[in-house]
Image (cartoon, rainbow, N blue to C red; front, side):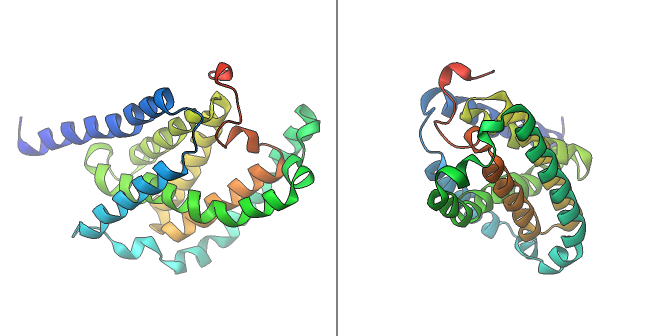
Amino acid sequence: MNLRRWRRVYLGAEYALLFFGGTTAYNALLRGRPPIPALLALGSAVTLYLRRSKDFDRESLWRASALRDEARPMALSAGANALALTSAVALLRRGDLFDLPRRNPLLWLAVMVAYPALSVYPQELIFRSFLFHRYTPVFGAGPGLVAASAAAFGYVHIIFGSWFSVAASGIGGWIFATRYLRTRSLLTTSVEHSVYGIVVFSVGLGRYFYHGAVPARAAGG
C-alpha cells in the first residue's frame, strides 16, 4: 500500500473518530452540559491548524463577493423553508408556535445576537472550513465531501437528545456544505446557517437545539 493510500486510510479513521467517536463520548459523559465551551475550544484549535496550513485558502474565511452573488437564492430558500417550518409547527405543535419570543422576548433577543458568533461561526469553521480542507483526500472534492460534512454535522446534534435534531441538522448541513462547496466562502455559509437557526428558535423549534431541552429518556425518540 503506497503512502497516499495509507494517508487516506489514516484520515478516514481520524474523521470517524473525531466526529462520530468524539460526539458519542461527549454524549455519554457530558450529556446535558452546555456544548458552547467545547465548541469554542475546538473552533480555536481548528483555527490554529488552518492558520498553520500553508495550502489552506485563507480567503475562503471571508470572500464577501460570494455573499452578494448568493443572497437572492439564499433568501428564497430560507423564506420557503421558514414558511414550511412555521406551518408545520402551527399544525403539529400549535402551543409551541413562536414560543420563545412570546414567553421570553429578552432571551430571544439575546439568542439572536449571541447565536451567530458563539455557535454558528465555530461550527462552520469545524464542519466546513476544517472538514473540507483536511478530508478532501478521503471523500473527494464533490458530493462525497458534502455528504461527509452533512453526516458529521447532523450526528453531532445527538447531544440534544432527539433524532429530530439529528435529521433536521443533517438536512441543514447538506444545504450549508453545498453552499460552501460552490462558494468557498465561510461568511456566506455562516450567514445562511444563522438565518436558519434564527428561524428555528423563533418559530418554536428551539427546544430541539439547546442543551437540556429534551430529557435523556427521549433520546432516539
